[in-house]
Length: 62
Image (cartoon, rainbow, N blue to C red; front, side):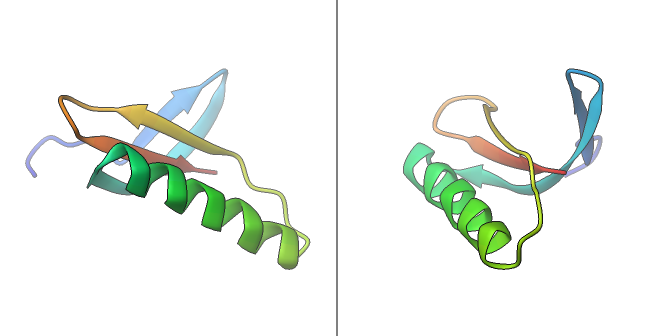
């Protein structure tokens, strides 16, 4: 886990790493869940899914 980035910037906004080491399906599912949850709570979230190596996906949130 050493040297793993916990934050990352997309178009000038800082995102926090929500979860890494996922399969593509898991990451997509999690992103969907987060968006749904936010809609229920009437908050806005930005979610990004990135690929980190083979079969390793990360979910970023701000």
